[in-house]
Image 1 (cartoon, rainbow, N blue to C red):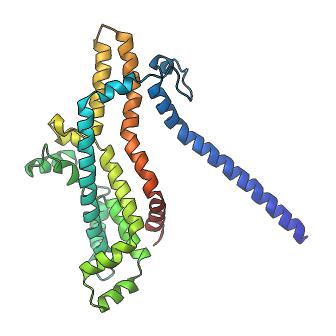
Image 2 (cartoon, one colour):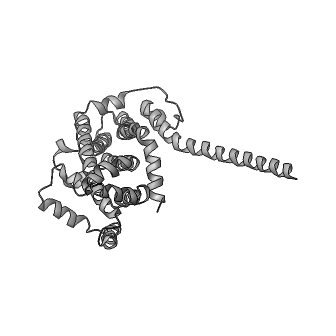
Image 3 (tube, rainbow, N blue to C red):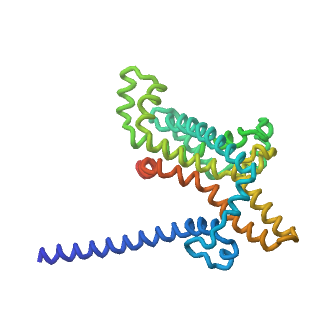
Length: 297
């Protein structure tokens, strides 16, 4: 009877493993296929793409769309601007979020519950677009980099995740012991808390960096000079201009429409590639940090 039960359990486990493996393969296919299609479409003859003849691999490879995009000097200028905005913005985000999350994680902070209530309230209510614009304008940040990095210096969700990590993953006894040894709050943060918080710091860097890299709405509102446009806004203009040229021009109308179609896929690749290249380096810390920071406590 016992042997029969064990055999049945092993059989059930095999069936379960087969179902899970099948679902995992299906999910991978569903996720990867659009990416592969976009890459293939960017290298393929746009007429074949529009006719639905490109399914997986590229056909009649052409680099015309890439050539048109990269010959645009604004693309490289936008890349430089976005790298600068992302680097400066992420550093500011990381410093401000850490300095806010650490004291809020300490049980000896007076009024911690009230402070967290008002912090959480900002996730559901905001001043709105017009008051935000007027504030940025009155501070003299219009058409400057600071309009893109200062207003969003702290994301409430990220603050809560980091605070939860400090509370659940770093024992309060360690902090008390450090205080007994004469460690100040600043030294405690820099010499004890942060070295033990590499997973959550990696998560915050990824979250904030991706947010800055993909951001274009704030630049659309606050930036006037085209020399200061981030990459996303430059690519938006390139795509809109190529489509407008295709519609307005009477010379080579069909070829311009096809070129605009290819440029659309090239723009997606250009804007996504840096983030895809960065993710593998922080994946291990990303998974660990999200699990601990979001689920514990």
